[in-house]
Amino acid sequence: MNALVALCHFCELHGPRTLFCTEALHLPSPSPSSQTGVAVSGDRDVDRDGEGLTMRANSSASQRGEMCEGCRSLPASHPGFMSIDDETGIRFLSHQHPREPQLFSVVRQACVRSLSCEVCPGREGPIFFGDEQHGFVFSHTFFIKDSLARGFQRWYSIVMVAMDRIYLINSWPFLLRHLSLTIQSLQSTALKVFENEQGICPQRAVRMNSVFSPAIFPHQRSGNAARSLTSLTKHPNLWSSLHSSFSWLLKACGSRLTEKLLEGAPTEDTLVLIERQTEQEEEMSCWEGAEGGISKPQGHQLDSELTPEDESPGPRFRSLRHLRQVLGAAEFRQVTWHVLMGNQVIWRGADSGLIQSAFTTLKSLLPVGCVRSVPYSAQYEEAYKCNFLGLSPDVVIPAHVITSEFSVLVDVSSETGCHSLLTEDNICSFYQFNISSANTQPTDRGPTLLNKLEVALSNENLSVDVVSHCLLCLKEEWMNKVKVLFKFSKVDGRGREDTQKVLALLGTTGSGEEDNVRLLKFWMTGLSKTYKSHLMSAVRGGERSPSQ
Image (tube, rainbow, N blue to C red; front, side, top):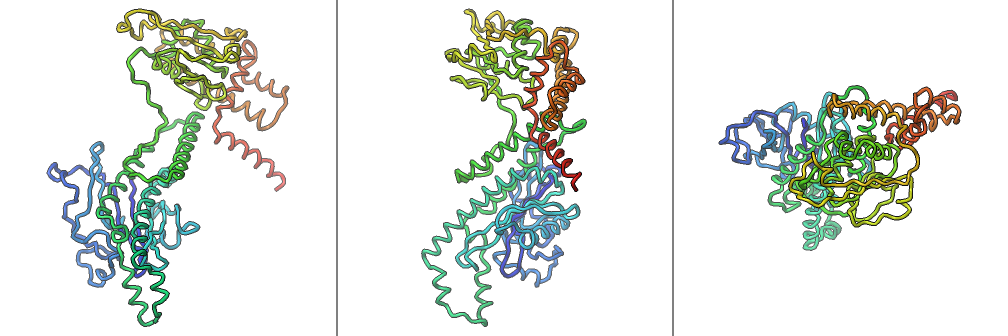
């Protein structure tokens, strides 16, 4: 990620100052001899003492004099810190200021704005600002306790600067969660030091009993204004720890989101996945806030929408065609019919890996928003919780489910024999699949999507990849019909007669009409919240426009 993280401080004598900065260098890796150390080679010819507009080696004495203890993190002779990502070869370099003069100016402006004009209500918390010329900034301001400071606290901020506005905004929940952990760790450590100092010598009583004199006040303030963050936290390895945290943040934030070229507008599946990821991040953030626990950022794992597959040995269903070959054409149609109608599909057996592979295959028939899955459970779960349910063989299914026409049960029993010879090609030789359902409606008429899919599956000239693309096109076609029906019936509120005309226009009437309508209504529940809110806002805007 082309970004930069910096810790900033508002000095009571010199104003906003940059204390510590971590940047990612996308440069060829140095020679092996120079990779062994953590510190950066001391070949810099720029002066880091002054924080003026220039960074020349011959900085004047006046510029050097503008640095106090509170404005400095590392000594001028310190080479800084460097970490190398073995996977990508990217080097993460940390020092008090960036290496390039252009970045120095950008970070300096972000520091000044984050601690002056760009402040959220309450002066503590996250805020976003910036422009195309100077970059965009995610800033999180916070206070650190100090028994000698004015108001017993000092003002700091952590800023992330990047030129990609969309990327930075999309990373807001992730940055907020992990930067909050770093800030809470600093605050809790400084609070212990503050309470210890106050226990030894309470400063509030000292200040109330001291004589105020305008002549000596500036000298008193200058003596208290030069406390470094290291002295406030008593952390012996503070800067190396911040280097590790900031380096991890840059790496994790860069690998968390990737660009993908899309042909046309995002699909409903893409929108639903984005919404689910956002909800998971918000729930995780709320959970961490409720727990109040503080852990190292390195211990956090990147978010992922994928659940790990069962890696236990055994046969697995590879595709819909493979599942159809194992179950048989009639049994496969019965199971897939229930899947497309939104009924609960229950698989019961001892091989959890086989059941999960069956669900993975069958879920490809539905939009992502219509899938609610419990891969393997030791107890029955109701249909409103999941439409795919895997059960262990000893689970007793309630009678009302067995007699319901809105469910189908697949019992998987193993035959006696040498299971070491069991492969994916001879699953039916070692397993028996008993399919039962109380449904009395015929499943051989529709829906039209299933009829077309079976034609593709039965055509051996079509490869598995071609059938997958065929299914993808069919899903998109019917998802577009779902959008039209939702807009017409739910948003516009048309009657049954008009809705029937729209169904005829969409080509869903005729043979299998009842199944087609059930499919459309079920798939309507899988529409993304983004699409629904967009339609509703468009309708409300259209209602207001005539009166305006």
